[in-house]
Length: 355
Ligand code: F1P
Image: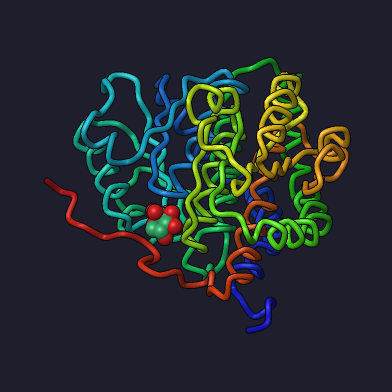
């Protein structure tokens, strides 16, 4: 089958348009934020399963570390089994389908505990969309690939905008972040245009490797979890994910010359340590693939993905998911697999989670 006939790659390329639609629809996000803010609650719990949980993790990172909110993310099942104190919580439930059993049950749990719930989904008419107090549409249109691509970045972006709307940081910092977010559709367009051939070459050169390690910190950690999940889902390849320096504390023993290391290195305070660690890993024989806008870092390795200059520094981790989706796609296609419908996977998991 020709590359362009796969839904996955076409949907990956649609992400700039989806970002544009979400941003155009910002007033509905602001309206929900306004209503939620009036409830006067302080803790924001973001939940989801699989990719939707990783989207929740990235959004919660921005809530806590950039927007000054009390935000955290847990898998939907953990929210059901270990719910938070009810006094001051709002639930943000992320699910492309709005039908995943645990996320639906988390929304029901919130209702029982009088915790207001915001559903973030591609299907507002789904059981979760109807169960929640508020519902926001991620505006992806249809996503035909089983694995989540544009729905992942869309859920992350929408939840992040919601966090910024709720944020009480200095108006000048808020304005700056708003401007960065508004620029994301054009940033994503540049990323899509500039990284695809690099991602393809990377996937081809990684073809002989047996296992992969993905490394990132902060929001990039959530991005790496998603990047690694894409590779596992589409290529059935073993991948592990670590916070950058954590890799030294034991997993370093895994390194040998048939292991690939994909690392997301944004332009922030983690650069020096990331650079040192990648050098150590290269010296131990691993094939290191940095994803970064910093030329010094990408130029130091035979295989790398250079992100465009001038893209949002705060939201580079979200944009870094795009080349990781592309690497997973080309890696799978290169192995003769069909990334649109991986074995054992369904669009959502429906089990009885009510007890
Ligand atoms: C969540 C999810 C996906 C995964 C698979 C099964 O779906 O775990 O992340 O790739 O398709 O479902 P959803 O709750 O976002 O619909």
